[in-house]
Length: 204
Image 1 (cartoon, rainbow, N blue to C red):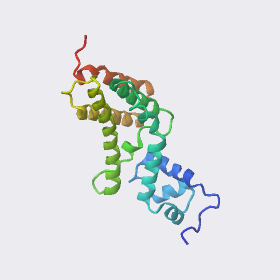
Image 2 (cartoon, rainbow, N blue to C red):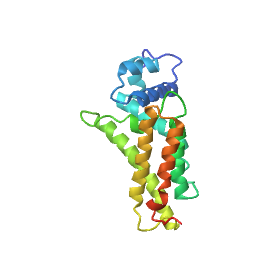
Image 3 (tube, rainbow, N blue to C red):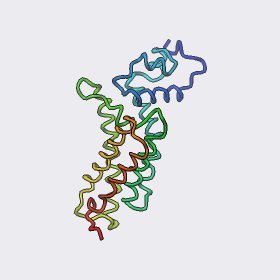
Image 4 (cartoon, one colour):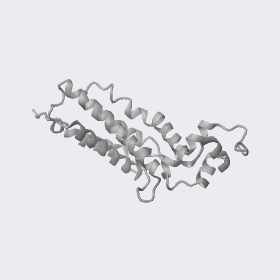
């Protein structure tokens, strides 16, 4: 009975991508089942049959986002030749990715976050965990740089990782507000200008 009403040519991945783009644009709380029905071309019973619940659908949409849209930014962190190059890659790839088109700008992991008051606690925690995971990726790369002598041992890798994650989150909000690629690249340049001070290296 749950399958009733689903189009015969139903493309699950395409429907999921439509849901992802909607959650990315409107956030979890502001996306209604009516919105999802229209975007996905499915009736509510078919959505529930295919994905379970709105929360489960969001989680799958988030997984699709992380596996596709975010890869250009994050894949280069571990392979960068230095921690400095990794952080520069993070910010400049962010600037390019977040301004790739006129429509979906910024980061879904940041912008889809619900307000904590009265929000879906599970969704809030899932997004919080994704953001924490990104900070952990940066911290791991920075700790490697300490072991390689690029960064002074006394420096807090967690603090630097949080700093660059915070800059990236701000770039996401600015991108959603319409900031140009040039403006975001300038933000990246400003952040990188303080690298030596951040990592405990004196400028010559």
